[in-house]
Image (cartoon, rainbow, N blue to C red; front, side, top):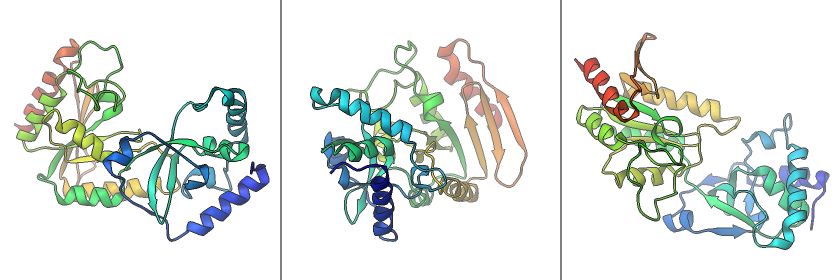
Length: 293
């Protein structure tokens, strides 16, 4: 049955109340995360921490209407009328919690669309960060943004040789040339490597991805850009955990290295020579060697 706006809001509220206190994220298997699937929209559950479910913010009915119109226009061109899959996390007791795609899901409910394409991910949780820190090998670390620093845009020339299927295409763009060697050398120097991404990657898949380059990653935090009422609290808790473990952090950006110390508010910035691009990893490593001395 297609839902009108009033029925949609009632359904969202009822679903949140039904699963309040019993909804628990669980890890999906590799097969579940790699196999393409479509599910009944009633198998998907709204994320109570998402702005979509916040009564003071709520759904954007203009966006929902655009998706409803898209469905009406292209439904005859089955099977795919969606511009992207709804990104979800597997939960207990049943179904999937929406991480990204609430408005597409709402449009499916409003049009009585029977199947919605989903991508299942294992997003990094605070408990995962706790486990990563328990396995930490050092009291100093390097942190890098995967989206801005490590992965390049398609068509870039100075990149690592792409991994074979099924890894090719798993991430958004190839790896910057020299990154695996840089990570290996920094690990040898006693640094733990921590990676961040605003995208909804499965953190364990990113681990396996870099293992293919013979690189050991200590920590991976994904979905940092998600809009959630609890995201600020989670970030604060994560930061406390990291500061308790690491006395020193080097955050490597495209043009600077920022040195911070956990017990001090002082920081020092080092400029990276970006030209030529092929020398960027060497320039980064030389700066860090100087810091170590």
